[in-house]
Length: 253
Image (cartoon, rainbow, N blue to C red; front, side):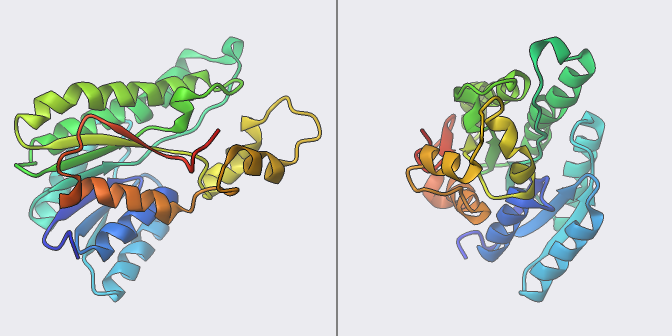
């Protein structure tokens, strides 16, 4: 219960890695605001699950692509849970597309969520965080790997890593840490649908064999393993880590 008495906001918290983070932080004692964009049933089911286990959680709808909705999300979290100590900015969207197919609308859709959304989530959370506050943004191993037709998504995640590096001294002056996690392949529904895209152009693709070859551990991550890394960064044990991106990729080659 290392987070007992702490209040956390997790964006994109109704499914996948976000839901695993919610479960972990609640299990560690934090009260958690679960942000969702469209998955209301999943978000409210997760609230009930946490309440049934003796925890405290609320579900709050907001689209993090809209800075005004982000501001409302943060303020509503503070109002309903009586404060804010931790932000985990997890919401993000995937994209694959050849250069000649990328449109300005594609760029705006990806960057408004993956970059602008994370920057303004940090901005509005920082209005309420005090000494010991924690911010964790979400990058990806894709920021440092080359995959066919993945330029837009990968570049958006590289921007996140630059954000945490440059925000660290500004927030550090207030005793707030800011870091990012960079998950590798993780067993979620989004990853399952996107996995073949990572190996586009390969003949006779054997997805299981490709994953085993890339991962020294021979498997994808479980969402709770990514959540464990987040739990470290937001805990007292992570107090001297800031401005860094932690790759949680199983030694991905």
